[in-house]
Image 1 (tube, one colour):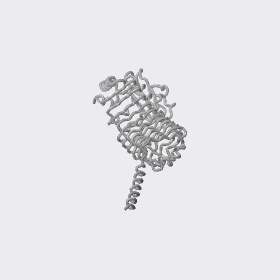
Image 2 (cartoon, helix red, strand yellow):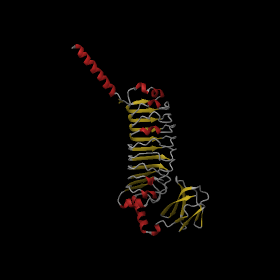
Image 3 (tube, one colour):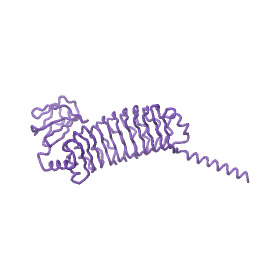
Image 4 (cartoon, one colour):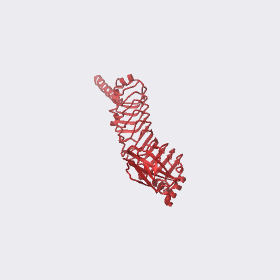
Length: 358
């Protein structure tokens, strides 16, 4: 009898040990890694763990994440001021609530995030070497924030079928924000971005345009049927907010806010007055005709007045000199081939046109 009791005790103890080992698959204590040696010894120190709560990877002494290949799930990961060039080591990471990658000056690729099946929030900030966003393709991502990525020229690599929020801040290298892989987007925020070219390919309900210093034309918002709330703030060169879409939103008593912009685009009442003026006065409607388009040596503008002011802008919002006008013709010989914006200002009326130089 005593032998049987001892045997049962041994079996019970073994089962308890097995259950304890299984329970240790998740490590619930915050881990802070500040040296490459700690990264290299990770699998030795945490041999049975694949799921973690919080992991902080901090400091210039870290140059490789390859030894972290056992990572499968985590609640929060932050990678701050390291010398890594890529995220190799995250290939097996499939579930993550939030990740913050900031001030990693040598990081050139986030491609190793492509295996993420679940991730709620992604923030990339101050990454001066990043040129593309290949790897951010999670269908379960809720919000993406991109802040101060000076070499990023577009966001076409992003794939986010269930994103509700996209925040683009201080992306001075962006020349086009076209992306058709955000079908569930609710809020789009652009802060200090040089262009809204391509914005018509999005579908969203709320738009915030903040400190868009070179923004002169928002007529492409007319194509965004879902838009029902807009904030325009600090866009100093924007003088015409009375587009068809915004006028319609004001008439429907939808949310339209505008502050500290160019003359004519400050406050709902000011915009509404221009909407009414445009609707009731035929002289307030754009009367200028532009042809040929595309053009080679010159373009012709009809029905100009002596008070008309002409400006030409590149697609990134830069004003290109003062155009020479002779007999209603503008000389294009100094322009390189490409797409341009032409702005015609005549007192309170501003019209914007696109033309192609061949």
